View (tube, rainbow, N blue to C red):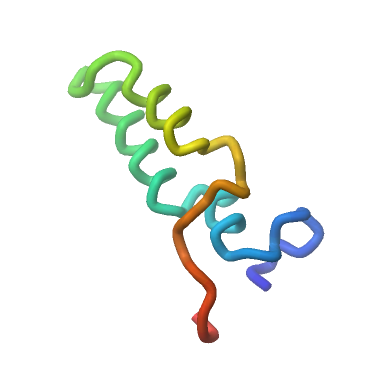
Length: 70
């Protein structure tokens, strides 16, 4: 358990990492958000990433496969 029991998704590390936004795609999205604020990426880049990687779906996470006590 990652301290996420009771949220309904703690059965996988991928879902927990997506929920807490510390998976790979969520970090990329945050970077795009910061770059957009500076005008350094095209308009809509963040929205495209959110849609492409299904960032609003905790069960769509792919970072952090099961294994060991990590």
